[in-house]
Structures are given as C-alpha cells and as structure tokens.
Image (cartoon, rainbow, N blue to C red; front, side, top):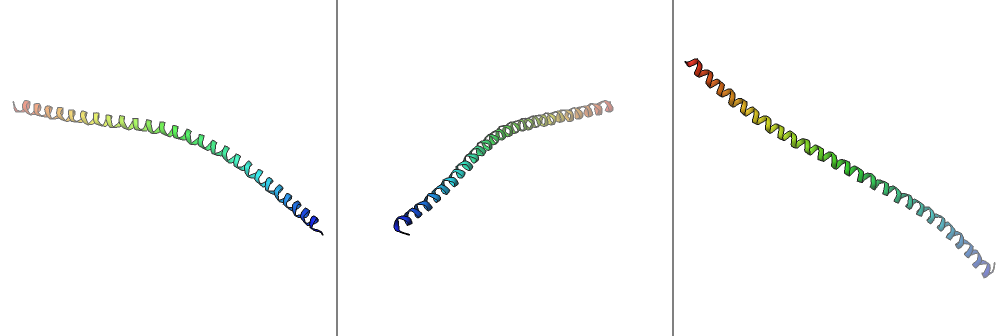
Length: 98
C-alpha cells in the first residue's frame, strides 16, 4: 500500500467519522428541540397554576377577613347580651326588693 492509498484510506475513515458525528448531532438537535417544546409546555402549566393558586389564596384571605369580622361582631353581641343580662338582673333585684 503506497502513501496515496494510505491517505485515501484515512480520508475515507475520516468521512465515515464525520457522517457518524453529523448523524449524532442531528439526533441531539432533535432531542434539544423536543426539550424546548416540553419546557415551553411546562412554563405554560406553571403560569396557569400560579394564577389559579393566586385566585384561591385571594378567596381564602377574603374568607379569613369575613371570619374575623364575624367573630368581632359575635364578641360585640355577646358583650351587649351580657350587659343586658346584668341590667335585667339589677331590675329584677329592685322589683324583688319592693
């Protein structure tokens, strides 16, 4: 085998290697494209979850505020009832004393 044949053999090997690298690179590019699509879909899903979660937290906070207001109102009403009970008891004592 002369030098020219050796060079041709090496060039053929290199061409085969390049074709193999090109094929693998195409596969990597395809996988990368699929990953980008998947990431885009996940980003949209996360955005939807964030909006839904925000709405639910807002509703929960509103319910909490209403509960606190109702509890305050109940405490105020309990205080009035207790005051009225005391007044009624005082009036009953005055009536009994006469």
